[in-house]
Length: 293
Image 1 (cartoon, rainbow, N blue to C red):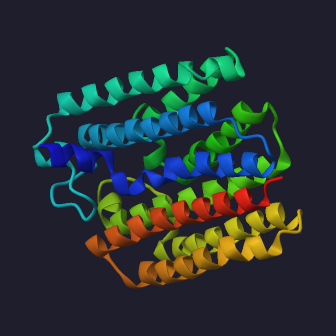
Image 2 (spheres, rainbow, N blue to C red):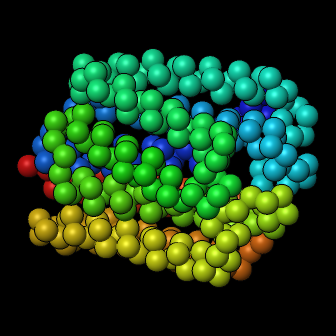
């Protein structure tokens, strides 16, 4: 039972939510403006929001009948019958309540208007899989990930630490969003046949595996280019190389595995893609610490 719940959390994908906050912290350090308390609250909120989305995805896909036993992806307890639908629904909204409480703790740092942002994030966490037009079933999952795992966490975390919206934060948020999209691409690449059979139209189903594998490769390269703009504008070319060369080597190796593997073998590629995202964020953090005034 415990292992079923751990699998439902999808720990392999949690670096996607952590990476944006880490990257924003790195940028604030480079500018000498780190505020640790709001940063840690943002990190906790981001991870909880992703867990809510993961729980909701499992529950609402089961309700909609888009999950099947023996699917290629990680085992789903609700579909396999080891977690009751009621328990998963309660866990979804219980975790959402905890995330909201954490979000309320950010109001002293940003103001009451943050409640609106929190509501939007909560709606997205559910609307990804639920509602009259589930985003994940209509080719909009990639855009949602770009916005809510890139633009939102990076820009808002940076703002809550510094009180400013900047071009560098925007560029960084797009870079992180593209890396988050790559994690979703692998997930949908693996599940394309199952998704097609139940009428779930992800971008991989709509555009094909070949096109989306190219999007995956280009996304990682564009992300690196955006980091080059941020660090290069300050003349930190050596630090840029330290940050991006290891990532690029990992990215190319992972992309080649994506193109050559199928089915359950892609679960490891999914984990590797999330790992690569976290590694790049961590390397960016290190070089920003070195570059800090």
